[in-house]
Picture 1 (spheres, helix red, strand yellow):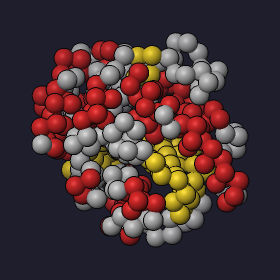
Picture 2 (cartoon, rainbow, N blue to C red; picture 1 turned 60 degrees about the horizontal axis):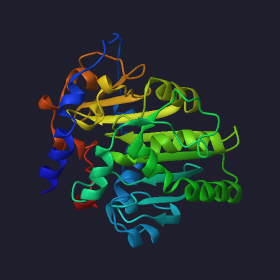
Picture 3 (cartoon, rainbow, N blue to C red; picture 1 turned 120 degrees about the vertical axis):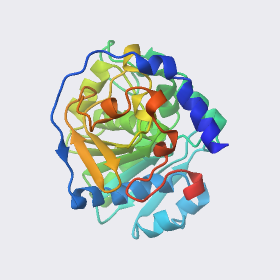
Picture 4 (cartoon, rainbow, N blue to C red; picture 1 turned 90 degrees about the vertical axis):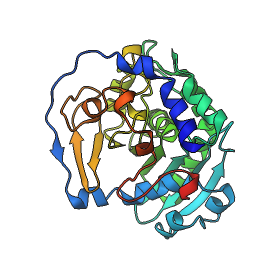
Length: 302
């Protein structure tokens, strides 16, 4: 059922993912083993978002929680369907507030339907003050983000003050990665300018148009979006519909091998996602779940 639901999610975008504007050639750089290993804590945080809410609140969610001793969860919410699971806490070893969003679990149909609502719309000006009218984002992602934005902001402010921290790390897989991208700009606009925003996403779909991607680039310099092999989700919604990724692509090409692709959604090196997965017909939906350096996403792997 998991694969069938995920396949339906992907095929809904088949026609739109095929059309794309011309690409600009860039050069890539290979990541070292130590660079790849450095993402492991963020992968574990993303995995934990799929675990039962009470297990996350007590930080007893199995291997993901065990891999991150010392993390202090202070807020967790959502139901995994109408509202995606999320949690907020503090990681002393990183001296950072951590915000994590659950992704699309194919077993949760209502969450899948959120992904399928994809008109470009303006962000809520109350949440994103000062954003020009030509900046637009995926309507479904925007609405999902709005459900938890103010609650997350309040908890983040409280933790930053209580811990004397100056960094917020936002993490998510799949839909959770889209919400993390929205959160990154939302937090950058609503927190003091001395607070650093760091983002790590996995298998993230496109969130907004080219001006939105430019806004992400300008507000969140430390942005990493990790794509796994032939995962189809990062190529949807299609660029032909006006959607564009921001900078920061890291593409895992095989276990233990990855490249950093420069620029926004326009690198056409054969090792980057756009060339590896030019359309969903040559992709592999199972790559969406992993492995991300040996780790898998989803409630089954919690």
